Image (cartoon, rainbow over all chains, first blue to last red; front, top):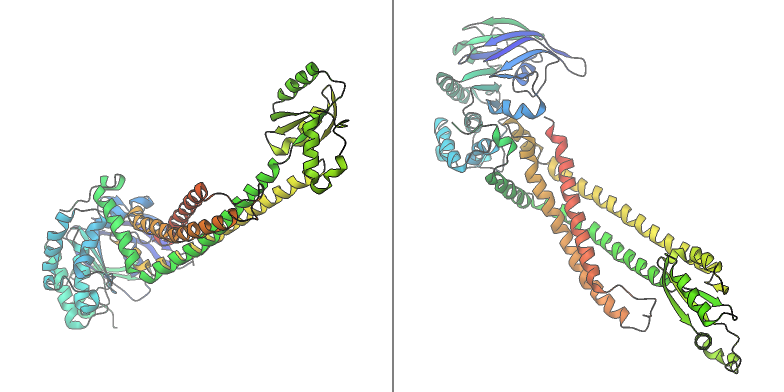
Length: 228
Length: 309
């Protein structure tokens, strides 16, 4: 599903963010990416949805060679993955329904397909009853659920999440994590960068620790392993 | 499973086209104040541009009228017979740059001379009996600027005694009208560029406010053209709306100006304004085209910066 071979990333300012990453993530896996701030976690995540390009090495993702694709193929890669961010990235002027439908409009789905599918995923994140509200009228947890619904609406094989619980209180974080778990149970691969020690140590999954641009640890049912 | 086919990329669906148009219009309404600012920028610059355009076209018209007055008088040798004169006329007509040739018998020439002298016509009294003027041809060239060249050719012909076309004065006249034209063109090009940058800048402000929207569109897999189209529609509409107001203002005020000037005593053969039609059509079309072009150009240039995610 996702494979990286000797991936290096050097930013124009000379920072070596990643130094020779090799990893293989199978279809249907749930992977936590942990590590100190500035160790290369974000870069690792950004390489997967092609926000950044590797300086060296190969990245394969769902049939694409992400490290080699042309600029105009990037949208196609992005359509095969769903992304969730710490700051939700919802459009403030659009309703909950419209925010989710947006991701389907962009790939030119027909309105006939859009309506039932959006209501479906809103049902999955339990926000059907708030479909007409604006993001500003929702709590942080609810906003993140909308973002998750948007990431899911096009049925991607992979969900990539960059600190999805970073802005949420512990209780809400657990609600979101349960949703991720549910999505993973349905067969979607989940790759999640996180700083949340409690979650990693409780909901045991594969843990990949990145330190100083290299994979320091890669364990099934691993621990968070850092004192915050 | 929703459609994620690749064909949607190359052939734009009609539904998508409708969506882009709707989005473009919606964005205009949603960003009300920014839209107002952009349209105002277009309106003001196009109004100034339109005034200059009309001014320049009228100056050009005036220059043309002045130039048209230039003619060459070819005086015929008094010894020439009728046949000689007829063949001279043929020779003149065979010069490709010549537009028209008119024969002026000496009596007619004297009459014209008297008229041109106005009050001092009495000086020529008594000349009827012994007219000192020779017969003449009045020659007009196709291009007024070719007058001097044609004149020197005419000089070489048989039975031509002398030639008069206001040598010296004519050259100065053409230099003046040429300069006026160049200054006009320079002004219009300069104004056009100013308008373009002013409008592009205003539009850029509206787009910076929406970089987040573009960022999200890119993240969910929108193609660059999918993002551009609504901005294209928006720019086009802003350009056209911005052009309509100056067009209406210019038509109305020019209508009154033409009425006032062409009907008054200042107007003469030489000094006249261009008629309302087709001038206003030309100016309206030019302003619409310029408005649409800078609207689209400004939008697309500004959105380009944010497409490189």
